Image (cartoon, rainbow, N blue to C red; front, side, top):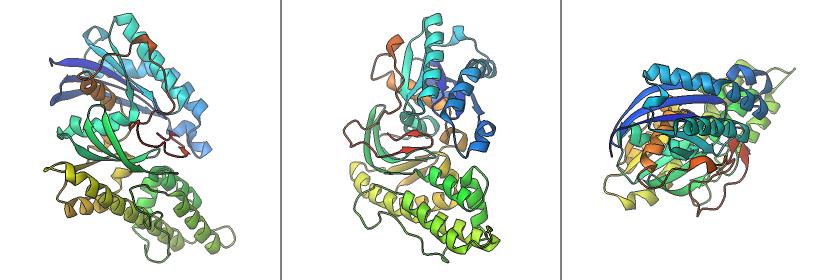
Length: 361
């Protein structure tokens, strides 16, 4: 494959993103990656409001693309293909991105590739570390949590996933329960440093069942009950808050570490050079990362976590996924549709529920 320059667009939730990627598989360079967040727009609502997110995407997408082109020092005349997230996600945002990408592709006469948002995350280790197939992928974020065996650009086998709240969603909800600021992940991690993780006996859901599926909704409810038993005169003591944060975080670490061991048991039979990769904002939590690294070491597997800027939602991963999938399929063209649900593993049963960051896939 010759070197290509690809424009990527991502708008599946509350981040408007555009990026320019240049190169070929195994030798790629991210020329620019722009992410315009919407945290302030949703701050007063306790979560992402789909209508507000969609409107913000429509207002920012063209500016975001222009900024990405300028930072990469290229024009649309230098672009060889356009890649866009076509799902899964909040449908209003996905539609905004798809329509923007269609307009650019049509005006410039460029091939258009609709990319599964989760495939972008799952293929990121190929972009950052050139990890050989097959590898085990844990996608752990605000809206999704899945174990995947990645065997090719469009070959994904799901070993398990969350059947309700994703970990990032649970962190945000628990942070609100114990009066910590948003986003909940960093707030709980920091507060937990002053807490005793053994004080409260919180559950480790689904560890008594075989398989790699996870559940975090019951853990969140257990924190709520503990909080209610502690609250006096509508306040929560500082030490109680720290201990609840520490206990909750420890429970999530235990669940993810044990389920990772089970996924590794299934995966390591497929290769002599096992690797487990992790992507998603929750992977920034050092306690969780330490637990995953310990599990990987038990199986002699390399542990790979891309830089945080490429772990969270971004458009460089969408451009790179298109680069990989060019070798296996044709462009999508103007018939591309936005999809709120789009499972990577078409043969696996649908995951239940819908998280704050979009439909489960």
